[in-house]
Length: 66
Image (cartoon, rainbow, N blue to C red):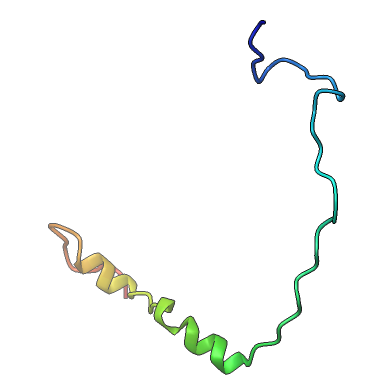
């Protein structure tokens, strides 16, 4: 019996399609925005200023910006 590869077309009669219940919708949840903000607070980062980023470079000269 020859091996089937992914590139070969299969007949619909050979395929086993799922039967039974279809997708079940998820229940709707409403969250308090304060709880959501507190949950993601650890991910919040303050970006460094251009001057700080420039100073952290190796062999940095003084920042040319005003």
